[in-house]
Amino acid sequence: MEDKFDIEVLLSEEQIDQRVSEIAAEISEDFAGEEVMLVGILKGAVIFMADICRKLTVPVELDFMAVSSYGSATVSSGAVQIIKDIEVSIEGKNVIVVEDIVDSGLTLKYLLENLWSRGPANVKTCVLLDKPEARKVDVKIDYMGFEVPNEFAVGYGLDYAQKFRNLPYVGVLVFHD
Ligand code: IMP
Ligand code: MG
Image (cartoon, rainbow, N blue to C red; front, side, top):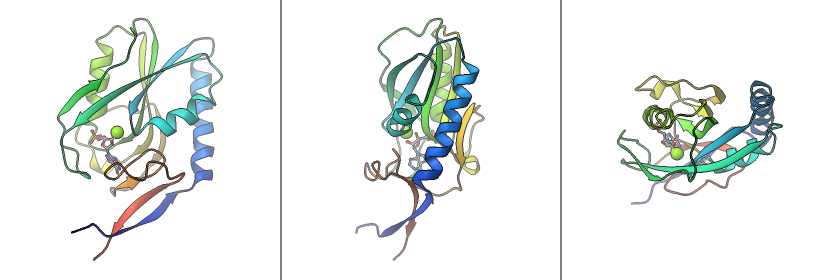
């Protein structure tokens, strides 16, 4: 049987653009005179990262990691495995991990421990959406876009079964019979 649902707009394109500008200004100020390396977590962070990096005023490098967490389309299970790693050393660099959403926190916690073990100067986190009600482990979010309710979000990079990443806004799935 197919899932039946509507997508309700949670954050408009304009709201996101405004917030992305604010975060980029904050990062640019915090790292003035330095360089940063953005590490985007595929695939959800792609749109957010593309927008944020173009608003930074400090020199920036881009790289990507992909992780798999085993679970159903809407529930993340916690087991994390790196399926694509960054391609360069981050030793001595200012790394900012860019994620679409922090749910249980397990993915970001794992990535932070992994990246810190490689001898960077710094590792910060930049997350578009924070779902605090779903948190299972503590994880520090340095740059946060929006707090969202414990519902399933799609759009602006976030998917439901790989669909809807291309929506220019963030919506939530509202299931019905
Ligand atoms: P966590 O490890 O539970 O924090 O899960 C983080 C990952 O689960 C994110 O990078 C997303 O890929 C996925 N995820 C969690 N919540 C949502 C959601 O509401 N919509 C889309 N993906 C989600
Ligand atoms: Mg993700």
